[in-house]
Image (cartoon, rainbow over the protein chains, first blue to last red):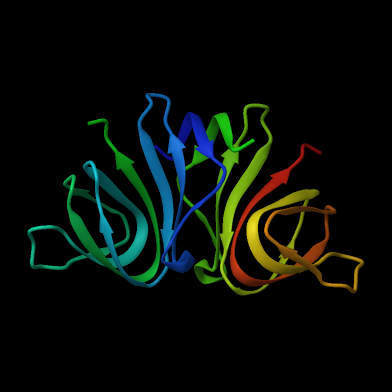
Length: 105
Length: 105
């Protein structure tokens, strides 16, 4: 799916880490939320409330998921899941385009 | 208007200047296009095909519009128009969030 139809798009961006990570919030037709974002090179820590499905559309990065001691390399497109109420870390080497989904809990 | 309803959102980002300028394409209910973008500090030159309405949602920048020799300062929210088939330049000092509209020609 290359686009979302019948969506509600928040106009203002979400800005993190001084603009090195930014996203737009989109509410899908079924009421669930996704954020479409860009990460520039850097090291980032994020926390989750509910579970998240992180779809890397394109990028070059490593991710450290909760409970793991191994940084997983991602080059190009790949999806990983992050449990709710947890923390994960990313080291981004190249411009990374992502779609983060927040499945209804 | 803080959000767009019944919109179609392209999933993949538009990436310029090595990721220092990125945007998402949104097709509105009336069929017109907007892009929601972020510019990080830097100096940028852009060209237009059709006319563009550039709404700065928040930012700190200067813009040089075609036919002008004066760089216009923008701090915060402001809107400017760019004629079609022209070039304009931006000097961005702080993270700048924008919504660019492409009125039907």
